[in-house]
Each structure stands twice: as structure tokens, then as C-alpha cells.
Image (cartoon, rainbow, N blue to C red; front, side):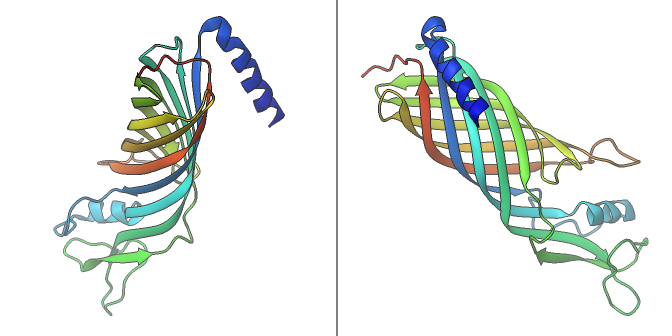
Length: 236
């Protein structure tokens, strides 16, 4: 904490020399994400599909957490800059849908057991006991328009992170429209919505480098107060 405070102090002292503007926002975040988009889910599935989805099931979850967002502009009137986001969140609700084979007695087989033409069905569960925090880092360009005490902006970032403490690693693209309302010279209120499309999930598997047919969407609502270092050139 002392090192962070010293770094922020040095940065704030350097802004008058370099005309930097920096927005630092601790945010409260609530997130919904999912990787299934059809109802019903596939019913005519081969053994490879069933075995794979048994290990990597369909999932939806709602998370609560926090983010630290830093937007930097190298002139107080600049409309383009750099956006950095660090986020951590934990599930408060989680729903999974997993295919399971059915044995001759009509019982579900926990792992494997799939055969061509064999009986199987989806099993739904709502359990967060095995869930772990999701951690993400994102970086990309920021675009803003200043009008009086208000900044209206849009951030586009490349994201990398994990929902399972980096047993696998996801790669995606974030889009975040936001509004900042400047309360005084150094404090502002901020609200934003973050859309994160996760395209690749790099996994530890003997057959694949990344999960086949992986796609997951996250939608977050973010709210908080931020600290403004340097000037801005908003006009009325």
C-alpha cells in the first residue's frame, strides 16, 4: 500500500510537466456470464461431444466483485488514450448443465460411460461449492468526449484471465461504454457497462491446446467513484 501511494504521488506530481490526465476508478461490479445460447441444447450428440461436455459443461453464473480501472490521456484535451482494467469477482449463483450417461439400472454415471446409441441425458445443478474467483486483466485504447462536467467514453480492450485460478486461460475482447460525472477537480462518479466476448480458452489437455468450439459472453454493470489527476478541457 505504501508503494502504491508513493507511485500515485509521483505520477500526480509529474502530470503538470507532461500534461497527463489519469482517471483511477475503484469499481463495484456485478457480472452475468454464460456459454450456452440455445434451448433445447443439442440432443443428437456423438460420444466425443458428450465426453467433452462432461468435462467442460455448459455454465451460467452471476458474480459480485471489484475492478480497478485506469484511463490515461497524454493531453488534457485528447480524445484517445489508454485503458487498463484489473478485475476480480466471485460467484454468488452458478448453474451448470452436464451430459451424463445412464446405466442399465437407469442411474446416472458420474464420469464417462458414453457409448454409441447409449442412453444419456443432461443433468442440471445449481451449486457454487466448487467455484473459485474469476481474475482478469485487460488493456486497450480509450475514446472520450468531454462536455462540461461529463465525460462520455468508450473503451476497447484485449482481455486475458481465468475462472479457475489459471488451470485454463481465456482470451477475449472487451467493449465498455462509460459516463464520468466530475464532482470537483479531483473526484468523479462513474458508471459503465462491460461486454466481454471470450473466444479462446487455453487448457491443459493431451488432445487440444485450446477448448474446441469455446465461446462465452460476460456482461457487467460497474459503478463507483474515481480520482482524477491532471487537467481536463471539458466545455459547457
